Length: 356
Ligand code: HEM
Ligand SMILES: *[C@@H]1O[C@H](CO)[C@@H](O)[C@H](O)[C@H]1NC(C)=O
Ligand SMILES: *[C@@H]1O[C@H](CO)[C@@H](O)[C@H](O)[C@H]1NC(C)=O
Ligand SMILES: CC(=O)N[C@H]1CO[C@H](CO)[C@@H](O)[C@@H]1O
Image (tube, rainbow, N blue to C red):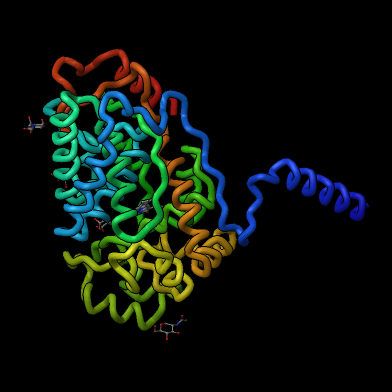
């Protein structure tokens, strides 16, 4: 019986291999298929309306990161926060209003970099001038600036599908807390959050690789130092962290990637293998047997990580996008266009958030 089953399984595997022949990986899993492009998005969306859009974003990010290395991390994280809360609709950029606080006022936002918000507004203003009006959405600027931040930091390039539109509705603090897992989360909790937006365990491991650049506050990992060190933390490393964060509540920051803090590479995974991940949400990717093999693979094979990161970013960048006539192209990324508060779309979204 077992033999029959294994023969059937082998036949199915063979058939699958034949069907997927064109995309079979020749280099030990380095080849990752491109995810599908959502309806309404396309790679050449601004070909007519703003042909230099991508080049303008690229050159801005290159120049700005030359002056401020940490801006690359700030921009990458901003796109992640945007997409995980209410979809990639630039809701993260909205300043709170008198009628109620938006995404920015929720706790996880408090550590987003002001310089990244400013850079997005500056890029968007430049595009508006160069293209003769507000034709490029703030959500597309976020997606492009994140990609270019990865590239200027040494990471992989990937093509960004464009044509997102910007929300006319705020995300609530509740949306933010439900959408963004805390750094204390372990793999099951992380997978629970990601599965709601159609991301899987491989996406989780690859996207967490964004922590190969940037900084974290002591308060985001102090639970791993006090009252006693987390046993999954390398003792030598824990000792170094306690020098930066000598007591609970210390207001200091430390690199997320202890080996190469400003370079986008696979050292984040090498850290995890050495028990030098900063957050529980990082280290548990290695502790948990479900995700450990992917961590091992990325630690050994940077190309496998880069290919998967590009693919997972394209997926993340298309979470619940607004397209066509939905939403709007904001004139000012920090505010909805005048007269658009409470349009049908925001009512629709409110109804949707009640269902989930
Ligand atoms: C999987 C769940 C994730 C958790 C729990 C998480 C948590 C965090 C936390 C707590 C910080 C530091 C905040 C602070 O203390 O200042 C941080 C920083 C950062 N995160 Fe994540 N993150 C996650 C996923 C991601 C993803 C998917 C990306 C991008 C692909 C990303 C990119 C970044 C970057 C670049 C920084 C550094 C920001 C800076 O230096 O300004 N994170 N993350
Ligand atoms: C902890 O880090 C030190 C110094 O980098 C290293 O020598 C040691 O092997 C590590 N221990 C473990 C258990 O990974
Ligand atoms: C953009 O909107 C924000 C928030 O309403 C406002 O503070 C800022 O002055 C606006 N910028 C411009 C250039 O109008
Ligand atoms: C309430 C609050 O502090 N909100 C902040 C959200 O993030 C941006 C950028 O860091 C700040 O400008 C806001 O003040």
